[in-house]
Length: 413
Image (cartoon, rainbow, N blue to C red; front, side, top):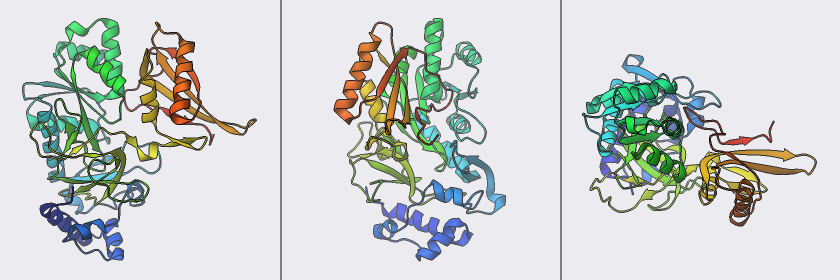
């Protein structure tokens, strides 16, 4: 999916705006001799950028407009290094709300719906993005924010919420609580808009079954507006990305080579109309592919496949590169095992070798010892690594209201 002429013209305008602004990227482009683009080949010569550049420009070095144009800032939810701060103009806020409203519409949500919003508000882009899109659509926003599950369930029942917006971890927690308390008949949820973290098929199926709802993956990241830049349509796994605001590429995460549609690699996004902090060829580190061909829904926006993980989520044990998604795939093949798991990696000094422990939940009808053995054998046959496996009862591992950390590498401790 090559960049088209209209998108090229928008990128050219962005580059000229950046050069005039004197911001962090203006210096990068001046040194590289970049003054604009007129062909796809020009565009592909522009260097990639990533979160490290944004941290180097902390706090507002990427701002490309005067202060009086900035109406809001957001910061990423990351926990390592300097935070990333992104300034927004009034147009940026409106464009984001417009894209988010499109997401709701693609999911079949209408102004008659009541949308319960559980992601966090504040510096994080989540809650306020879900709300702005809801208000742009004209639906009723129920701005709960995270936590206080008792209040969440009370409002869900009393206000007859029809849509729940959440991370997959919190949607799971709510599903388990509704199941435990026998509240299924009292809730009126029809749809769930789930974002912020990748989730397994097992978790997806459990949430959909226990809440009796249709689930939709919403995509986004703070650096590129926030959640709401893409969503899957009913019956399809691919997420439509709004190419009037964004241009998407897939690259080989190791070589930077642009990959053809259909091949899996790292998502790279260019903001075509963003004013406050325009980003050109931003490496997201999310792994997916552009689905070739037309969507059965008739929409012409390009589609990204389900996010498979992150290129920076990889961990290495006994020389084998592994991703959490591979662990989830194996656990999903074992009868009675839930979607929740934890990975601990440590170094055994006495034997001078790394060890990996998988803690997984299983229901009481299966034999824990045999289940652990089955998981060990699957790891050995599929990944050539034999972990220690501990099976625990359902609901033993901690649940999170935000993203759930699954990999704990103690080798540097």
